[in-house]
Image 1 (tube, rainbow, N blue to C red):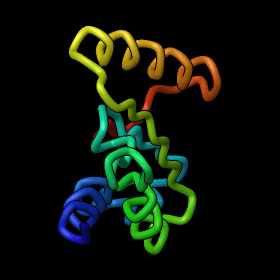
Image 2: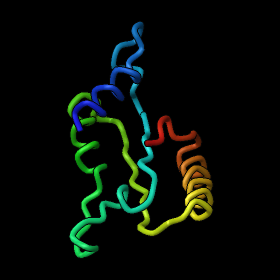
Image 3: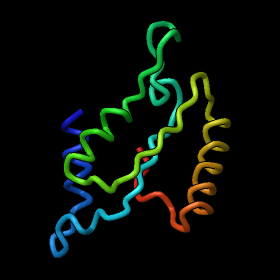
Image 4: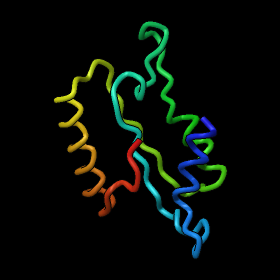
Length: 101
């Protein structure tokens, strides 16, 4: 998990602005069962985005992580959900997600 977050943070940091480049950054964790956190044959759910957000906030406390996972989703469903998630972000915050994982 730390490798993913370190790579992510490295790419977010602007050399002239430092961590100020990440102010108000929003990340969409999007996908199917793994994103939703499916485990224990569906008796428990633990999305990876929980740990991702925790590690991200250590360096960038204002970053916002949104989890959008649905077990069993196929390609057509995922594409429709992605369009909805992006549109909702745009309407609510007047800007697109900065990153989609």
